[in-house]
Amino acid sequence: MKIAVLSDIHSNVFALEAVIENILTQNVDCVVNLGDILFGPIAPRATFELLNKHDFTTICGNQDRQIYEATESDIETNPTMQFILSDLSFEPIDWMRGLPFDKQLNNDVYLCHGTPTDDLVYLLEDVSLGYPKLRSDTDVISLLNGHKSKLVCCGHTHIPRTVKLSTGQLIINPGSVGLPAYTDDEPISHSMENYCSHASYSIIENNGYGWINQQMKIPYDVQLAVNECKKRDRDDWSHFLLTGRKM
Image (cartoon, rainbow, N blue to C red; front, top):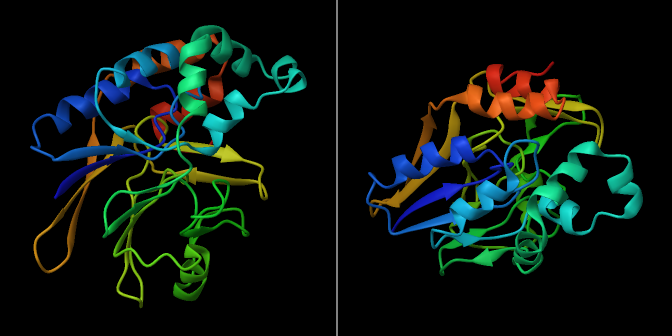
């Protein structure tokens, strides 16, 4: 089986278009989407409509939940959330609400956004120092919480990774389709950076000896996404998109 793995689109329809165009040249058997799909100041509704044209296996991310669980207070204090909800309307929100938390794709392949038990926890990275550091083998195995699938695909960190565990399991993070850098204050203040504006995704295929992972980096017209961010006064996102670096 040859699988295209997407994650963390974050409403960037322009990056998604470029990634899908590339996927169509790769002769894959299926496409999986690991969540954090429509949250962002770029083009939530257009992203939903583009995805709706394709038969992708999709799970929910933490910022998908953030949209459909938003309280009145969350909305009042967050202009980006106000834009997202206004742009999306009801159908995409209902769609996100119906997405599964995780998915066992087949006997060998398991999909999650963060970890198998928590979509807010990074499976592979420890950020306690304010920057991402690869977790120990023991810590990753513990966070898998007993999942034994030979291949685990996770997202959430926006950083492409391929990690082989002492159990023989392979952990793949495809990086982010739509946002190559960001800063967050949970669990502590930290930044994720890829140092490049390209859209990221993975193509994985078993050659009989194990899983081949091609980390794909796709250039696109990033200025189109930046222009949308500027309309929403999100200069931080504009910088992230253009540079792949923190502010």
